Image (cartoon, rainbow, N blue to C red):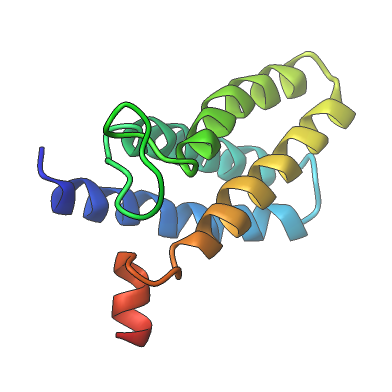
Length: 128
């Protein structure tokens, strides 16, 4: 699969995940809509976390000719989503909450912020 196709599929999953994640983060917790939207958010995040492992780093240092520092946030996502899901299932809401906030901050805010670094696609779209 080409990098451009991977990037557009990534955008097609991460943009709704960002919107849904923001809504879920600020809405009342524990409701049926919170749970439904939360599942959709988790599926989108897990899919995009796996997908981005196939995207080579385009900016900065590469490891093994493919991976960059940003890929550590993919690992964070792939690790955090199942843990957060199972924490909620077993009633450990404190762990679920902590993991979901970590996921949102790490994957959405930090990784999302890196997309606006010169040389990245979204930098070119907004500032190029």
